[in-house]
Length: 290
View 1: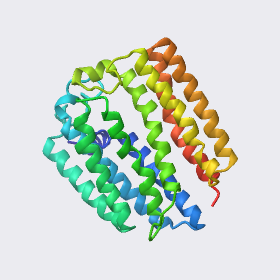
View 2 (view 1 turned 30 degrees about the vertical axis):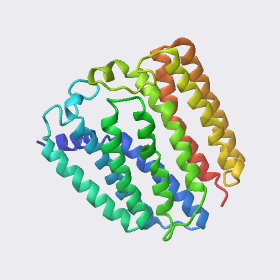
View 3 (view 1 turned 45 degrees about the vertical axis):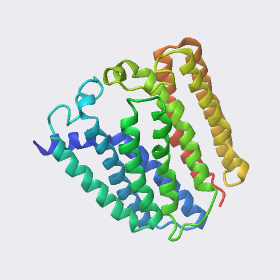
């Protein structure tokens, strides 16, 4: 295997875009926690970035190992390194274990809570969420917990001795609620492919008005949840305004999906969700009131 081929397969094994989104979310929360203390330790930020990248990559690697036979059945995933035969299960396991152990040890250098949450996120994502995807639509609810841990990990990483605060809980809650319209819109777009592997991720297990209704309700709930930072006084009016406008547009697209039940509209909801979270988190960072 050439170096270029290995790098390409490694990117697919760790789901590079998803891993980078996790690192971004944790990094922004770290900077919010640092801003609260009015000082930024850039060495600790680098430690968090590296450790977070390794831990997220490990969780995705374990996910692909567990689902290797299912990935062969889906067009979207059949070219991943394990199902395509370019990487053995043993090679992927060694890489994933190395990343999990190294990432956890690196994050433990920051504090115990950060390290423990990282281990918990790997176990919950790989061992609980991954197998539940074929059993019940409740898998989306289960997956929302490890998916919302990066803000907690990033925020606590900013403190030598993390204290009790509502801020990381609110950051967690925003990302937790966001995942429902995000994942359900993805499930709507990819439902035909998911069915080949027996994945059941839409609320009713099919593209119907009830499933679309769940997307609308979750997008609606996201609006007041995203305004909590402004109501609680640690977010300014700019983040409040951006969250409101972004949330209303997210809701508008979801309502259009409810009306049309169209895959093209579900794709618009999905792409809106891709932009929503990083935009809201960035604006919150710059409009955070310490």
